[in-house]
Image (tube, rainbow, N blue to C red; front, side):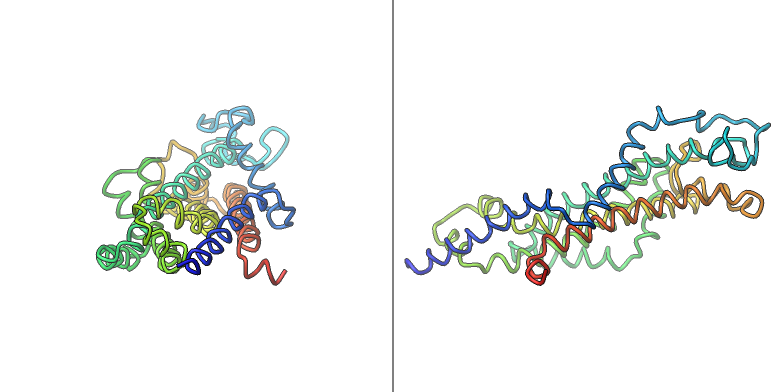
Length: 296
């Protein structure tokens, strides 16, 4: 019996070391994390202070200035209605980040709860995973378009439509971790000691899911921003009166040969933001994954 508890203590200590390492990684000087985090912070600042960065109102029509090229008065030019592309691109940063962060938080939260229960409670595992497999069988973009079409275009609807296809991936990730952790000696010792299931999940299982979920959240955020832009480009995203990178590019595709700046600047902002999130995710993965950390 003492041997089991010694092994349990060693395993629990290893888990606490891993969580402590997670806190240290937030300040570790990794080039990928610094570059990605710096770019993402710039985008967040632009989103938060968007009203202060406007040169003109992004939704005000000014037909006299239609299709003006970039210049001192309109830094990114104007569209076919005379609206300032710079102001609309800055405002689109706010929409894209709101959708990306909200989708990441919602999918990680729901997927964590479902994955913990599915991975630890064997009776529910088969039922839950068959439902997740059914959701994953449907292409995410088609499911999002269907949900938006049924519920109507709005920021909340788009966020929910993007979140639902991401939940099964998070559930499968958490479930795989739980299936491995529940066989550890310290979990078996906690079960033998009569510890209640919620306490086992919260104290022994949950800490092991935090590092992978942080990395997964960055990829979900990047994917959500791309999906939101695709929906906007297809006309199934946010309403036209709300400037987003997707619908700005959709409006400018007809005038691409005459005014390529309408598509170029919001497209470049989208690519830069997604790149920043992905680079940050890669840096977090390299730092938090113990196998990669040992090689480094």
